[in-house]
Length: 169
Image (tube, rainbow, N blue to C red):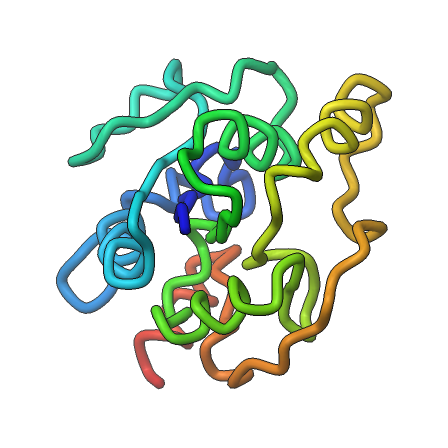
């Protein structure tokens, strides 16, 4: 399977690029990349190459001005070598390789908290491209199995306070 790291968010609530925030001695991007590499045969990062993020791996530009996870899904599915892709937002630093594999095994699938992280088939690409063209950026209406994951792994970092809470875990 292909793992896709989503690094294209604006980080407006965080105040600086979340991908570069540090947790346990590594950036959120490095941490997520490591987890994807443990779980997947191929790892890709998708975002806005014009953001100037200094990351230790290449980033594929999602090719659209809109900042929406849907843009990352479309770009990731287009670039992936494998039919099943797991998508991991950079701001979910506690998701494990085992959780990603569980999602992939049930694809299309997402956890109880919503569409990301999630696993989706390349066959969804035409539908997702149409949604993007219409300006419908929601992922919540995608049909997917719900995989119950450990809620502790699903911490989402939107603010500095969220990061501090995860550091104290």
